[in-house]
Structure formats: C-alpha cells, structure tokens
Amino acid sequence: MNILEYIFKKFIKPNKKIISTAVILGGFYLFQQHLNLKKTKSQIIPQKDQKKKNEENQNPPNQSQTLDLIYNETVRARDVPDEYKQFVGAEQDIDFVLQEYGMGRKEVKESLQKYLKGMRRARGDGNCFYTSFCFQYLGYILNKASVQEFQDFISMVDTLPFSVIHNNIEYEQNDEMKQSFKQYCQIIRSIQENRNQNFFDLFSDPQGQFYGLSIIFLRNLAYKFCEKDDETKNLFLALELDLKQQILTWEYDCENNESVIKLLSNSLNIDIILFFIDEDNKKLDVQQYKNENQKALLEMYFIFRPGHYNIALKNQ
Image (cartoon, rainbow, N blue to C red; front, side, top):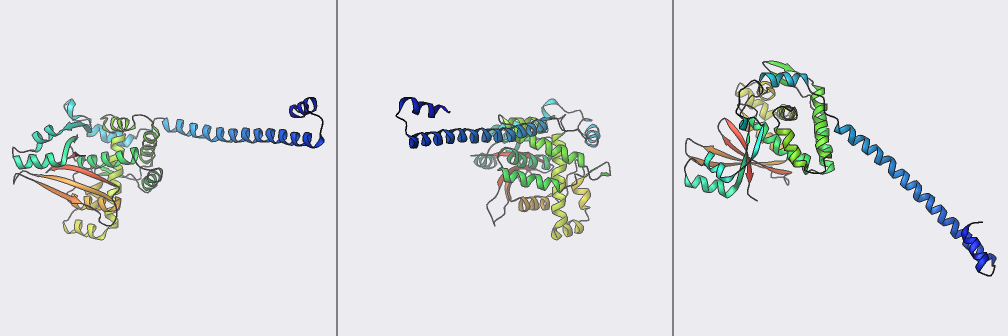
C-alpha cells in the first residue's frame, strides 16, 4: 500500500473511486520522478564526455621538431633587445604612433589622430605582414567568432598541408604542425576567463610555437588562394617571381604583396585598411581593400612603411 492510499483509507470514508484515483496519482508521481532521474542521468553522461574532451584539449600541443629547427636558425639566433623580442608588442597610444610615423608634419599627425588610437608593434622580420594579419584574424576567430564560424575555420585548416620553405628546403605535408595548431586554437576557444589576454600571451611568446604555426597556416592559406586565381598567378609569372618561393618561405617578404592582400581580403571577406607612410613625399596614403558584395566579417588595420608592417588600432 502506498502512502496516498493509506491516508485516504485512514482519514476519509472509504470510496473505491477516490482510492483508485489516489493510487493513479501516486503512481504518476513516481513515474514522473523516474523520468526526471533518467533525464538527469542522460545529462550527466554528455557533461562527463564534454569534461573529458575539454581535458584532452588542455594537454600541451606536441612541439614540432621542424619548427624548432627553424626557430633556432632564425628568431632565436639573433641578438634582439628585450623590448623587441615579442612577436607582437603591447598596445602603444597615439602619441607613440605620432612620434613613430608623424614625420614632423601637422597634416600627417592630424590624419593619424583622426583614424587611430594607437598601435601594436610586429616583430621586425620578413613575417611582419603575416604577423599583423594573423594576430587580428585569429583574434577574431578565437575570441568573437560564432560556433559555426569556428567550425568552418577548422575545416579550412584541415585542407592545408602546412608546408614551409627554409634555407631553400621545402618541408612538405607537416601534419603534426596542423594538429598542434588546431589544438592550440581549441584550447584558446575553451578558455572562459581572460581569453583575449591568453591569446596575446601565447601568440607573442618568443619561445612558444603557436606564433610560428599561425604564420605557416596563413602562408599556406595565401598560397592556396593564389594558386586558384589565374590573374594572380599570371601576374607573378609576368614579374618573374616564383609564387611558391615568395609565399611559403619563412621570413620572406613577398615582392608582390599587394596581390596577396587583395586575395586574402576577397577570399576571407575581410576589409583591410592600410595606412601607407610615404616618407619620400612626406604624406599619409590610406589604402582600402574591400569586398563590396557583402558585409565584411571584420576590419583589419595596418600601418605600413616600406619594409615593415605594424598593427594599427582604430578609433572607436
């Protein structure tokens, strides 16, 4: 006898209809409790699976021996002052920008102040364009992109071989680099607090491999876009430039970078605003690369003085 049946028999005049109803209600209550318990258990299992997945993502990515070799012969082989060792520097305010790029001209300073609030310095080597681009692009993908955008990004990464040329030797099909890069990205995406700061710390770390993997990712992506575009390929041929060597070589500053910028802008649907410091004519030239057909995924800002790109920080 369940508790509801006992109460009705003891305190209420027995009535078979009432008692039957009580029994049914009591049974329904127990059945509902059973369903709730099953639901709770079914929720616990995916949560455990997700926890396990998150823990796997937290394992340190494998270090690439090839990339370690490249680092040893390039970035680690140079005697660089401490303030220039980071691949990307801390934010600098507009006064720093004016001192660095103002050229002592009032109109140039006014234009810079109109558009910008500051900058970040990219380490001075042939990777500086890719450094400036990657920092802004990955900053969006890892900090602001939707779940679907991030999944599309990972799918795009999966199509790339992560090849790199160093000392005229091509290292092809570096799957371990690809997997490590994906793992870094997944770890950063899983961070709940101070994710943007963690991204900056990992990317700028002169001893860490996330930066190098990011550069190789972007160079491979740019090469893929160029290979598929007949106009770009023909232009490189006309200029007698080896497309693969120009784009896949570590720390090589492409001699036809404008074509690369245009393709990255169109293919990734990114508006690029380039502040070109024309020191010969003592003026600032604002160049824009925009996809007019649809709303841009994001805007990127660069300061370019022949020989070096830095990251520009726009006014809000």
